[in-house]
Picture (cartoon, rainbow, N blue to C red):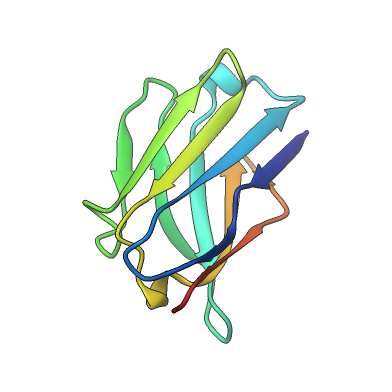
Length: 110
């Protein structure tokens, strides 16, 4: 199983980024997927998730700003991040089942 996250980068406050996570070697269509993040000096925290039926869940800190979606034809889960804040700066990880991706850095700074 591999989860390959991409799309991170440097963005100004108020900007947007879309992260992608491509899964291979797993039954993606029936697997719930999640996004997590870890800021420097802090514990990893849950950002949100999407069930196999497309129902989404979000942490209060990102609700209304972040949107998770999935494309089973592409074995890909997305994290659309809008209205980014400096406190969103972190390494973002995707996860599915018991598997984790390698993380992608998101930096929100002017």
